[in-house]
Length: 252
Ligand SMILES: [Zn+2]
Ligand SMILES: [Zn+2]
View 1 (tube, rainbow, N blue to C red):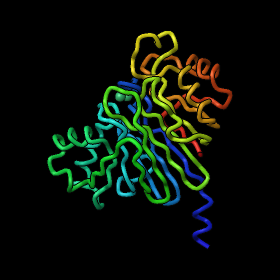
View 2: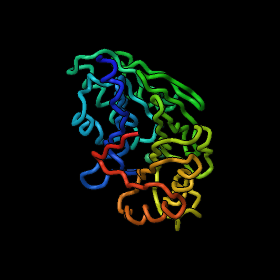
View 3: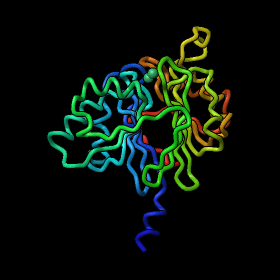
View 4: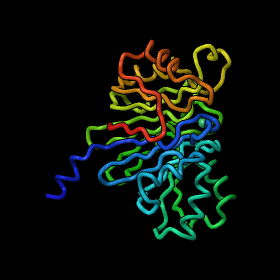
């Protein structure tokens, strides 16, 4: 039966870009492709991720776009994919789940926004079913309204912290997830600076709180050394730790 064959494909996340703040040479800012048998969701559209997305799917195969917040490194491919949809790609409007602040900026850059997208505003504790993916959002501890995401597909689950400082309670998104992708912008020596981002050590703490099976560190600022991030996260978390790289795929 076709339905059986479809259901045995495990959901997966592909890294489209993972540089924090600005892209490293040859890199791209934050973006992931979350795929399950019945949905292809582009989670954060950071600069550089549109090119990488098309190495995996065509734009017309997108089920939805989710944007965690309005900082430029997380969404600025949207006005570019807007061009593509309006002038070249044959597809219907794509649903975009994003914050009110992101929508206000997007309207300025995409004057006929509704021709390409159907915007649905997300806020703290919003939930949405996208294809066979159940999404839930939680407002983080960041400079602008920012939504961390949890995605459940059957028994599989995945949490993405988006950008956050240490005062966000990750357990608002539950626990026992297969995969956690956490921001890990710097190392523990900068924790005292009060920056609303996480250190690798703090990312490890979050992964322990939600009993994650696998922690992926992302959003490292350019120049940060991945090995040191892995080491510091592993001091707080006993599970598997990986530093994200564009093109990596994780089954969850
Ligand atoms: Zn960021
Ligand atoms: Zn940010």
